[in-house]
Structures are given as C-alpha cells and as structure tokens.
Image (tube, rainbow, N blue to C red; front, side, top):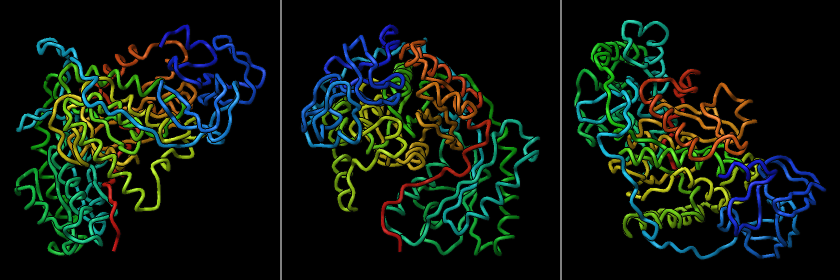
Length: 511
C-alpha cells in the first residue's frame, strides 16, 4: 500500500471499488480530496463510505470484489453498513489453476533457519512439552490434577522441557462409538499426542466411555513406552489412585524428554497455522495481508502455511481455486464449501450468520466482506492441497484445512494436523493461546494494540498509519516466526495461556 495514499482520511483498496474505508472517524461535512467526496453521515474508523451513487440491488465492491448488494439506494458520502448492505447470490468464476505461478523458491542452501527439536521420525518441533490427555470429560479433573503436580518448581531439574500441560474437553461420550464426532475427537486426541512439539504423553480415560483409550491405541498403532502411557480410572483403583499413578508415569517421562536439545534446521520444517479472530474493517487491509506476505516467505523457504476457517472464505473461494495446482485440488475446496452450505441449511442457518457483533461493530458487514479479508492470510502462492479437519498436514507449501470459523475449533484442527506454530490476526483483540504450539498475535490497528499490548506481539496497524508497507510487515512477521520457533516466548506464552483451548469440532447430535 502506497504510504501517501494511506495518509488520506480514507483507504481505497481497488480502482473499481464503489466504497472506501475510513482511516479515521468521519463526520458530515468532511471533504475527502482524494475522492472529491463530501461525507454526509457519520462513519466510524474502519467502516465504509460510498464514493458513488449505488442503486438498490446493485453490487457493492471492496478489494475489487463483490461484498454484497445495496438493500436500498445509497448516496455518495453515505455510511455503508448493515442498514443498507446485505447478501445476495452471484456467480463466481473458479477458473481452476488460472493464477498458478512459480513461487520463486529460495535455494536450499540459502533458506532461513531456526533452532528446533528434531524428533526420531525427522519432524521438527518448536517446543518440548509433555501432554496429559483426557479421552472423555469424565477424566478431565483427574487429568488436570496430574498436570498441576508439575507446575512451579517441579520441573526445575528439567530445564529443556517447556512444561506439562493438560488436554481436556467436554466430549468423549454420549455420541456413539463410530460416529463422525467420535472419529474427529480421536483424530484430535492422537494429533495432539503426535504433534512434533510433544515429547511424551499420557492418555487418561474413565473406562466405559465411547472414546476408549484402547480404541485410540488400536487405531493409531500406539505402543506403551516410557514416553507414551495409558490409564483408565476404573482400572486403576479410582480417581485418587489414578492421579497418583499418573504423576508417577509422567515423572518417569521427564528425564527422557529433557534429553532433547535444539538444533539449527531449515525453515522448511515449519508448519504454520494461519488464524484470525475478532476481525474488524482493518483486518483485510493490514494484519491479514501482512501475514499473507509472511506466509509467502515461509513457503518460498520450503515451509508450510495452513489456512482454515471454511465459513470465512465463503464468497472468496474463487480466489483460492484460481491458485490450485490442479483441478482436483480446487474441486476438493469447492466440495467443502458445498458441504457447509448444506450443513448450515439443515440446521436452519445461513453462511452470512458468521460475522459476529464485534466484527460488525469493527466495520465488517457480510460474510463476503469478511472472507475477502480473511483469505489474504493465505498469501499468493499456489494452493497445493486441501485436507479435512484434523487430518495430517504432509504437503509442503500453501495448504487449506476444512475447519469451522470459531477460533478454538480451527486452531485445534491445525495443531492436531501437525502445526507447530500459529499466527493469529485480530482487530477487536484476543487473548488466545494454545499449548503445545505457540501463538503469535498480530493486531490490525494501533488503537487496539495499545489497549492490549500485553496480549499482542506485533502491531500491523502501522500499515494503516502510513509507517510501513504490507511487504515490510510481512518481513517482520517472518522474522518473529523464526524467533518464536527458536524458543522466544510469545505474549500468550508469557501470560501462561493455552491450557484450556483444546476444542475439537463436534457437529452431530448429543444423546
């Protein structure tokens, strides 16, 4: 974004747009010289103002794309928001692969590096944790009590372990054994245990639940060893005895886990989750495209960047299919979009239910507008694969995972799939953290960054302030990714967030 343009009180994103974004609050009578436009109604910062007359039913364009349709006539200089802009159907040209291009890969010998933990199978972690994992809510308290025993000075003799953390949830039973929800929970349970950031794990079950420890062990071929152990409360003498035994088993893991040492490795080993939450009118202008620029850098250095939140690419999916390396990859994405359309319809909802009250207060109006900003997190490189929720991420490059838009559900899927780091953009503010994978939070505007400095890692609002370009911020974010991957604590880690954010997606009926 040109620095002279962003010093204007408005931000124009594309020549074809018939709205611009207010960089600062506008009041009636303000004159925007760059547009030859007199403002006629109050417009909050981050919100949209019409630059031309828009007839009822006419498409409203931002980012050079359709974000909705006028629900009544809109005059130049008028605030454009939920009172005069709504959803509507329109054709998208999926043009599979039309925008595929050479990513400009960095030569292997010149690729960026970080200091990570190389596991026996060659995968590389950014952290070195031990996990205590509950298979069912009935064992959640026991799981928490085992992990609590290793807080404070309990790990003083093991300086190379980042911590012992609990993985608990509200499910694991009441939904049948061979249901899709059951399979998703098992994928997430195993995925956390197998994440490269985890050096050892203990599975804790009750014994009579649907999500049986034995079923997970059998499905994934797990073996009982020093760093992978299994307990059932009903087979271990009750809750107190299970806590005692669990503490004993985790304690035995610590010497083995502590032997791990960081080694300098290529950035090609990183798997980065791309997430946004509490978005605002600036998110698609500052933090999201800056993260996209960082994702492009990671891909060019041989790494993997994973976009999710399928409901939040709705209406912008054609921008991703155009980058698909094959029609088959593009069709996999469209199949997930169609599934979501059917899913929401069956439940009496619609895709435009997604923008939250906070999103709208921050300037976003429809899911189309939100999606166009959200896909910017994915950068510009080719879409090499589309995977289902919590499936292992094996491809190198830019990957899409089918996840809900709700942040804990989405990040849980990424981490279960193997993500070892997450970048999280936010415009309204978020205190999200996620063990075992560190979270770097990127603020979309300076005002929020200053209000929540203790939670934010990087202020991308300087782009709208005219103090940096998207490309410059992308470079800063990439440098921070490498630093955090090498052991620097993110803000959420400094605060100690991340013990309660495991939230597997459950979309079937409870019984």
